[in-house]
Image (cartoon, rainbow, N blue to C red; front, side):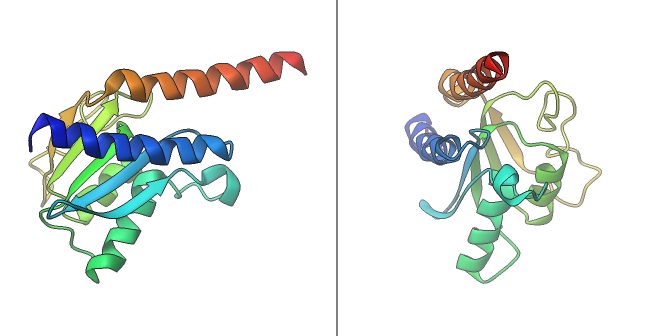
Length: 157
C-alpha cells in the first residue's frame, strides 16, 4: 500500500478519534479497509458503556465482520491511531487481518512492537504485517491534548 493511501486511511481513523474525544472518550479511532473500501469504523466507547472491551479496534472488527458476513477478515488492513493492546491484538489475530497500520506507539500497553509484538509472532496460527508511525505526530497530539485537558480539570477541583 502506498504512503498516500496509508495517510488517507489514517486520517479516517483520526476522524473516529475525534468522535471519541467529542464525547469525552480517550481519542482512539480505527478503520478497517478491504479491497480499497472502508468496511468497519470504531472509536473508543469504554467510558460511556462501562465495558472494558469496547475499544476502537473491537468495534471496527465487529462492523467489518457484519459487512462481510464472516468472522474472517482475510486481506483486510486495519488502521488505528494508537498501537493495539493485548486484547485488540488477539482480536486482530483471530479475525485474520492481514496488515496493521498504527500511528502512535503505546509504551504502557502496546503489543505491536513496543512491549511485545504479538501480531508478527510466528507461534500463533496467523500473523499480521505491522507498519508503525503513520501520521504519528497527529495521533500522539490528540492523545497528549486529551490527557493534558483531563489533568487541568482535575487540578481545578
